[in-house]
Length: 363
Image (tube, rainbow, N blue to C red; front, side, top):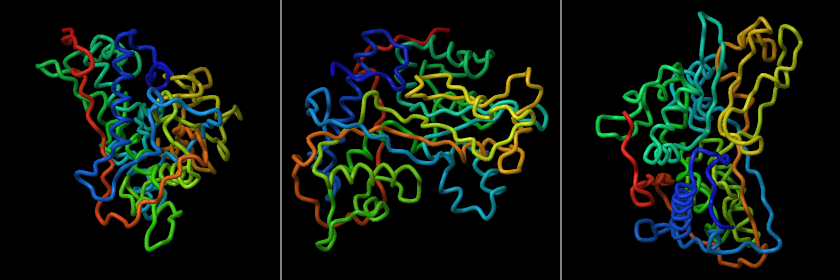
């Protein structure tokens, strides 16, 4: 492999910028492989986690999608009813912590469109540094034609990820902003889970016990335990492990089982990928074309009309793709003992200036 591609095989960057992005991803993978033994006594080394740019894969290489539900499990755990959890999940992007965030467009009481994104913020920080005009054009294309440069960039030219067009569940969603929804966190999770772990002489296999023992994520989310358990199963099989290129979180799909439209049309046909590829989608919109004569709110799910974007999120599956190679050959002893502290999955901030000279934002 010559370089890491952008999430979703996006085409926003030129060759020099693509190389700079690849360099940054490579650095994050190397950091995740090293861990932080200087700060955390139960963290490293992580010898199974490897960088495809410097360590070739073997002939037995397999890829595996790791999937989880998009609805925030922490919200569900704190809610007494479906109505309460849907309302809470729709109220703020800050609670949408399963690498899927959304915004709802309404006309009166009717839902016209729900936009979903799983694009990591680091990519947009990078893009804003090297192509600020492209950032503005993409906001105008996907969020609002009235988006202005000073809506997105500060007086010093710095990009504001939580700007007016990307911070609420009402004005649009360009990329992820919830603090745990980062590419850095994804890479750290995979690295942190790549060691087999033992406690009191017993090899751990349970997803919840593994994440508490290794302290590499939030045990109450859907995503973190699912990622950790699948990666750790490969570690216990003595495989070398990494993330597939392009590194990113993607939509695995939307299930419309139990959905009914007013004209009996296929409800799945209104789910449209608007950025990324069919296999690696990073942005999607659920919207009924005007010629059908009804709105998203007129569609019923299990007999209930859609009143919240969260009702759709219930049926969305997210994914990342892991890579395993040299199965049975990566024979390293399990780490013994467990770290008794809060999860520390970190999202390293991208240092764009270190990889490519940014151009000043265009006014």
